[in-house]
Length: 98
View 1 (tube, rainbow, N blue to C red):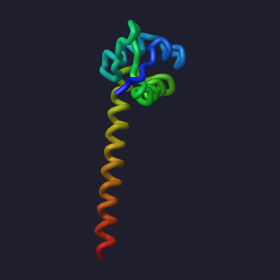
View 2 (cartoon, rainbow, N blue to C red):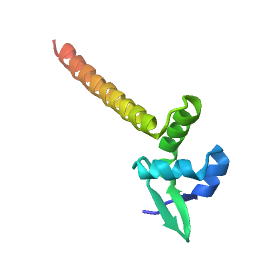
View 3 (cartoon, rainbow, N blue to C red):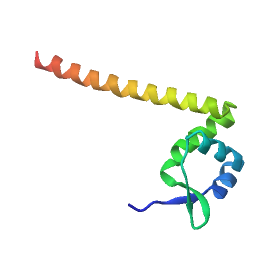
């Protein structure tokens, strides 16, 4: 499996955030960084979650701990939505059998 890495320095410039922000996210376990060709990078697959974190930080002025809590709540809401869809689908199955 080939990984596509993006340099943290490029992400800092693109999203207008400081390197310390990425360091704190990594320390809290919210992102995983890699060293590739002697530069600190992020796997491209993490960009979607990273963008959520940046928006929570910049738009809602949440600190790293707040971002962690918000992401956990959003994940729980998504799981509940999936469970609800599953229950609705099973219910439709029973309704059509009658």
